Image (cartoon, rainbow, N blue to C red; front, top):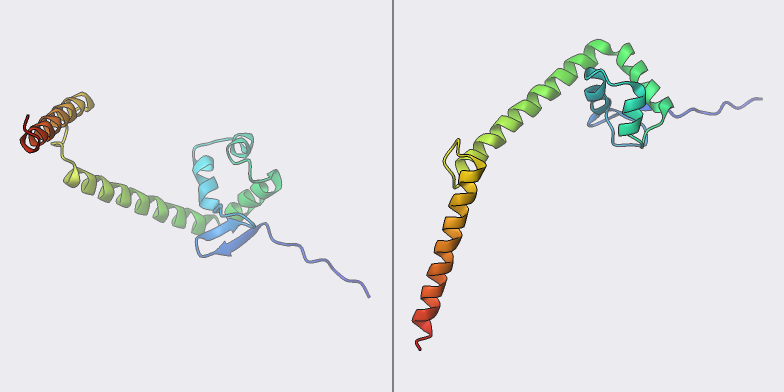
Length: 131
């Protein structure tokens, strides 16, 4: 009677999508590097928490499920772009600066506002503490 040792899969399905087992790294995170034509060596250097074996498993998974992986990856990118645009719009709406103002102009306005606040605080102090 022989017993077979169960081998833990290197890629597992998670609520975030297929991930490298034992990590929070999805295959889509690795896809960013792959889509940018980065070498396996580069990916391993940028993601030192994964092994060459795990990276090979990612490549194998992508190859075996290419159509679905590409579809999901594109959906994730679109969602990310939509969120970036949404937050950019919110930031512009909440910004105390007019749209299109340069960083130098922002610094100038901030310095002016700080000087005004200091002057107002000083005037308030002078009012409450007469000489």
